Image 1 (cartoon, rainbow, N blue to C red):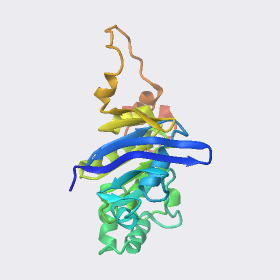
Image 2: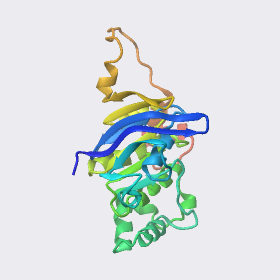
Image 3: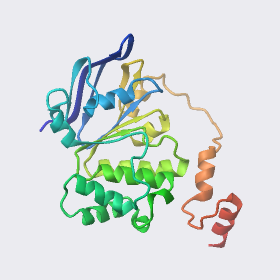
Length: 267
């Protein structure tokens, strides 16, 4: 087995006159988080759709878990899981029922135990018996990722997993993604958020106008800029810092920041 979970070389894709991918090359090491960073329309989702066998490329080659996406699509599909930009969960079912249903569809033994294990892994046990329609955005996203792990796929694609989530929900998803890689799953993450790629990825590739224009670790990418000058700057907290500091892990359910702050002072 190679050390590369994903190998992409010379990938091209066009829609009539629009060239979306113009020769994309990158490798993803097993058990790592690889971020494909780019603005809207850069071609990130197109790459994911090709790697997950939902779309055929015009040129180039790609392998996932050692299988060619063009000639061995069935093997690729057995090796991966794909989580799109919107949570694909049934809101009329409970969280546990969603997981049990997916386990049965994938013919996994002991679907009930599998569901319970994933609920615990993603801190959803307390909400297991609630309908998903009552879940927050972060909880739905974590449930969606949990469903994608049924069957233990070695490779998972996360296509902009935090789009539309509030700051606290984003942190919840980030923690779940880091846990995946920590347990050996290879994660290819597409995002347009710079802080997300910086926070999560072992390696970052910047996709721009259909080409990879930079690829490396965060430290390697930083070296592309001139050496930093040391200056004294008084750093002010960002609004996200303030928001997360105020709500913290407060479980009082208070929506008003003043109420939340008062609850903390009373502890």
